[in-house]
Image 1 (cartoon, rainbow, N blue to C red):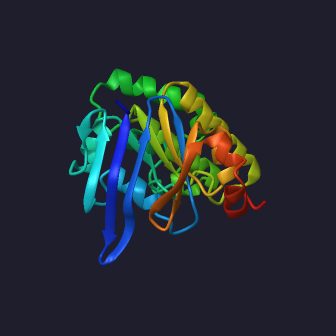
Image 2: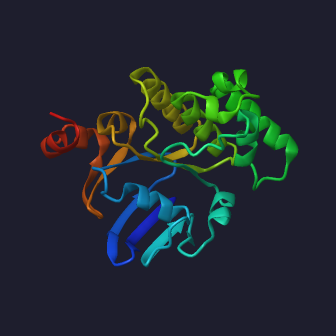
Length: 236
């Protein structure tokens, strides 16, 4: 049984169909990349998986349970965390307060403190800025904060939406190194990313999404060298 299995997922915005019956699966421990152009439905997919947008039809099976009508906060409690597009940090709250918000579904204070130390170890820059307002951080630091906040929920699977968006090349490399570390520590990763080359370079498998439909899937390395993928998404 797959950790996450999406079957015939359909999502509408009014009369416009954003997802046209997509199906894919994620195995425990994998890094799965979901690539495609703007407007392909990548963000909609993640928001539907985490209960932010309702599905019109289809099913989302996570660890054998159907999540299709499960509220977003319950999905977090079940071990699925979401790093949203654009970071969405709480600008007027401190780094520390933002991180604690990520643990709002957890009760054990000792375990929360351990998770906080783990996040600070993985993101030393956040520890240095623990009392600083999140809105005053750089884009790369805010991305680290969004990732750290998601890790505070102690997720089994983390969904990342465009983590490299708007970042300098140095920060992009740093963020992708951290994604690899998160994966190697045992957390499954579903990665939506416009930087297809970077995404495919760290993923195990990948799916190509075009106007609400999955048009291609396979091992990430195979797609990295696929001529149609290179022309469409790798600028080659």
